[in-house]
Amino acid sequence: AVRRWRRELEELAEEEVRELERGVAPEPETVTALVATVLLGGRRARTAGETLAERIGAHGALRLRDRGGRLLVAHVDRIMHAERERRLAPIDTLEVHAEPQPELIAALSVLQKER
Image (cartoon, rainbow, N blue to C red):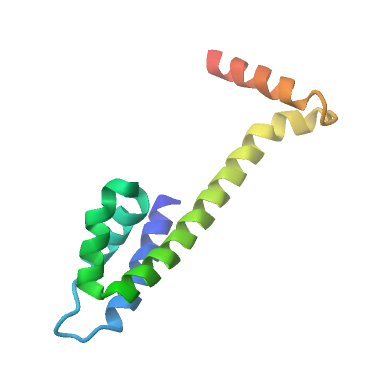
């Protein structure tokens, strides 16, 4: 999932760089690294955000950050959903009603940690 996100982020960065004038366009790899740092670095990545805006312009940086952020959220949601389904599969096979499920999930978690 991380590789796929990185590839898609690289494609977004390449699109953004293509829209710039050839003489001033930075390398797409640099733009990808900066936007990934901005998206994953939180407040500590402010400098990367400023550098990104200097390299591709404020509008381009905002556009790329928004698109990359939506992409990141979609990938994380997909991963979380798959993990949730994987962890709940043993409980689903028991066909248990909703009330005792939290206790069963906690017990299953303890058992899996002891393995």
